[in-house]
Length: 242
Image (cartoon, rainbow, N blue to C red; front, side):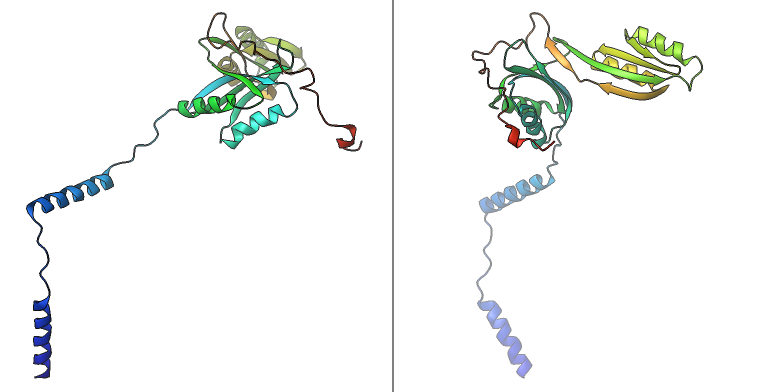
């Protein structure tokens, strides 16, 4: 009897609960559309970044002052860019230096990098140069051993002549070759020299100038730095003891 009364009490409480609201036609349609939207968003595949990685060459006119090289190189490294080549030299403008920088990345990121670099205090102008509208020249010194290959000396000299390279030094079993050309041409020459034994090698990096009348020529800035801008402010007391 006690269990029967307990069962009847449970049934009465269930019967006293309000019925669950029924979805009307409009609410049902709205609920179905929301569910399908959520499911479609879950099933939507993520599109990967399909932009190819490019290698670009930038020429920058910077103020010739102590620390400018470290600031520019730190600017690239702080943004996660690797510098493939960096060349700094004097120009025909007093108090100014020219940097030629080769770096790799996607087009959008490299364009953004160029704009941010132009905003640096030490930088006056930044232009992008390519092989179609500019002269890109690299210089390499390659020391090749000819002792491992029979007749290798004559073959190395013949290949050097084909690439318009110069033999600047000769020993009993080594040749020192100088080649100045487009970076891709130097890469091809080095690959051919790997058939022999490359003892030592050094490259200067890319120097680039826009072709005559082509876009990318760096014009003279409106105001040049003062004569004392490139003088170091370090005194003798700041130097380490000898």
